[in-house]
Amino acid sequence: MDPAANGLGEFERIARFLAPLTAGAPGALGLTDDAALLGEGRVVTVDAIVEGVHFLPADPPDLVARKLLRVNLSDIAAMGAEPESYLLAMALPSRCGDRWIEGFATGLAADQPLFGVTLIGGDSTATPGPITLSVTMIGRARPPGPVLRSGATPGDIIYVSGTIGDGALGLLAATGRLPGLATAAASFLEDRYRLPQPRTALGPALAGVATAMIDVSDGLVADLSHICETSGVGGVIRADALPLSDAASEVLAEAPSLIETVLTGGDDYELLFTAPAAAGDAVARLAAAGRTPVAAIGRIVRGGGVVVVDRDGCPLPLARMGYRHG
Image (tube, rainbow, N blue to C red):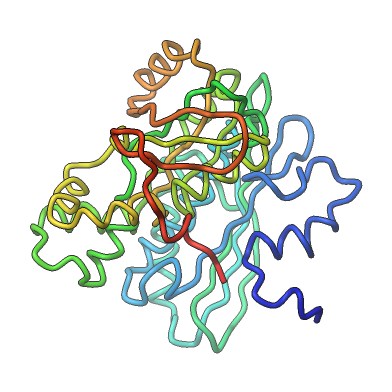
């Protein structure tokens, strides 16, 4: 291996080694988007979750299944598309017997009718390692077509759905790293970590309004950085405009330094998108129609990179941009 490649992160490895393999396939979008385009409005995405990385070893199998399905549904929503069907691949250690698999299937069965998807195939194999699960989700974009990451322009407003930081704080709560947090708040945050809420109604509705969109999986700052890099622009986030749940606000009141976790921790699976300033009323109408709160949290600017500022406009120093897979 080229020594210069040592230490490359996930996205650098994708850009260097895998993106060149997409030459001649415009629907691959250079591996810079949430999904690939198959023609006739169809989009396809694949996402995997690994025990000990994306879910806890003690998590019930039905919740593991539902999280697996929902993180893929979120990618489809981020393309402005509606989900249709999926394929499932499982690599399971021997300790996952019939009872575990039955519980896992029960979770899929619970979510399929909620989101209008059906299993159409896949693969199952054994592994001596951790539970490793992958879904390939197929969807269809409604006219005027899919929403990509590449359309943001200076002056666009940056929006995010729901609340931010609950997933990352939920992991801290679930692993005993938020001592003293009230039981109700801890339970709420843990549920947000284990069972994300993909915005499958809002995403397709934003087609034709949003100029760029992504879901918040690796962290708000990192995921906005993906939009900015692909669009060739910069972004400014106002920390005081972040939509926070009551539970997250409770955590920050006791530990203000965890604002960095809120900004960069990920696992929220909310929609982060940009839209022209003139589209504010349209965004508000779509949010109300989908019963999904949406907050304006910043603006797209000329240049590059993402800056988070406080209420006085001073940049907040961040030790990292978001979660990185190696």
